Amino acid sequence: MLLPERATRQSWPNLKPFPAQYSRLSIERAYTEQEYERISLGLVPQRMEDKWFIFMDGNTLYVHRSWTGLCIYQLTLAKEGTAYVVSKAYANRDESQYPGGNDPYDARLLVYLIDHLLLQKSMPMPIPPNLPAGIATELHYSHVVGAGRNAEAQQPINLTIPRMLGWVGRWLMWLVKR
Image 1: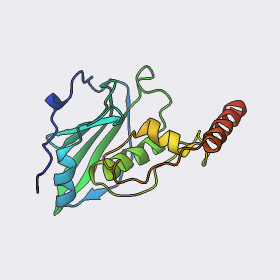
Image 2 (image 1 turned 180 degrees about the horizontal axis):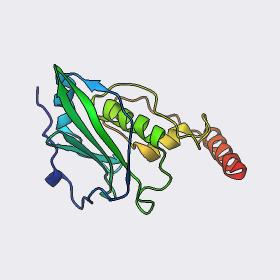
Image 3 (image 1 turned 135 degrees about the vertical axis):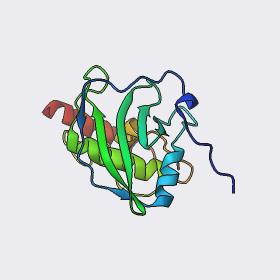
Image 4 (image 1 turned 120 degrees about the vertical axis):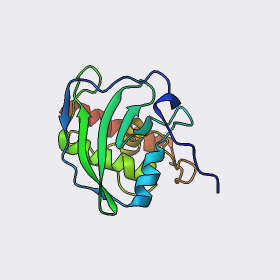
């Protein structure tokens, strides 16, 4: 079996450093040695729809938006026995780079990105508190995650005119209520 090449800082152009404005996230999570090895491979976008570039340097995981190169999350793992636990996690709070941050949501999203994109686990995506459940969740997924690592394995979304109009209608109602 051919393993993917390990992502490094040099694997993606135009990366921006983590800003001075950040907040510490509360994440209690442990990974097995096998999961740590998979996480440490990172993720290099393969197509335009892939929204994240992720690499590990030492024991710190850097999570960048692929289009802008902005570093949105940093997560440090520490070995405890046979597991790797999250010792520190940070979210970008520079409003010019990542507006509207929410610590609990960002903690859930960061864990989701690791589990979904790097460990290829199937789970529901967290929804931000300002986005009502059921409102264009497929569009929200595409906006935040993009095609993702398993785009070929995912069920295709059946886009019909009535379904798209329903999404647009719910989105417009949501905008009006804000």
